[in-house]
Amino acid sequence: MATKIANPIYDTVIKYLLQDQRAAKVLIGDLLQREVVSLKISNNEHVSKVKNDISVLRIDFSAEVRTCDGEIENVNIEIQKALLPTEIRRFRRYLASQYSSDNNYIILSENPLREKNLHMINIYLLGHEVEGLDEVVTYVYPQPFNQNSERIETKGDKKVAFINELSHDMIIVQIPKIRKVNLRTKLDELLSIFYQEDIKKTKHEIEVDETKLGDDHKYLVRLLASAYGDEDMAKNMEMEDELNVLIDNAVQTNATLKEQVNKQKEQIDSQKEQIDLQKEQIDSQKKQLSISIKMLRDFGLSDSEIAQRLKIAEADVNDIQKQQGEL
Image (cartoon, rainbow, N blue to C red; front, side):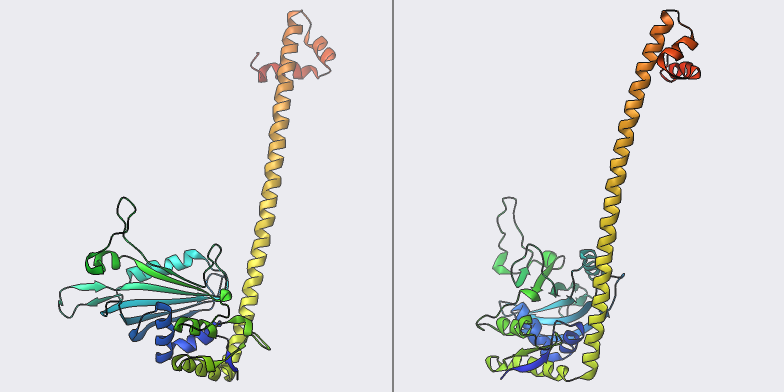
């Protein structure tokens, strides 16, 4: 039997989920595809509106994760969730602030005189699709290469601290691209909870068949089912809908204004070209008149006679010559 849950595409719902210690460890562990040994929220920020742009949820975690060789690594994990297409510049600013933060380092217990900058892992949960990126989940890891574009294998496959502390990993999840698949892995199970085509009466609720899920993911479903029945959660989702409509309208209005400005610029540029062309034609005509005036003067005609023959004002005879540098 399918279970109705609050749609985790909403900021307020995913925030509720990540504030639960076990749920956060399951979600982050599945996305990292590594064991999360310990997890602690270090920053919890919900920015409803950034410079009249989009709704963004940001949550930072200090975590201990188990590496492939079984060692424990301290990392800083940042989750940013955005429902609408985002501004890359804002993500860059946030990354810069995290790189410069004094909170993202630890003192080594075995060497108190040395501090270690935490490796950063950025997780982007996107409610929109990224152009040119087809995968539902994309992993971006920095790798060292030599001058021949050959990957450098570090000794014992150990991470080089200099590289590890000056770079970050990135995980991009495109929620609209999630499709129904056979649930072979923990990541498949997690993504099935975000599947948007099972939306029922409103987009606030979706249905999940939890009988196909393991215990950890059943726990997530139970939390989301609890959120589904919460009146405050429903109101917050409605507020998000209203905000996103306002933002979407603002984006559309801005796009329309930009289009109008571009059209006006094209018209102005076209008019400028016509004016320049007309000016060239006038200059050419004046040059021809100046040549004609000089020739008529050489034949001994007076300014009055020249004006009469060329059908111009007598005062213009000298003016045209002066403009062309003939006087």
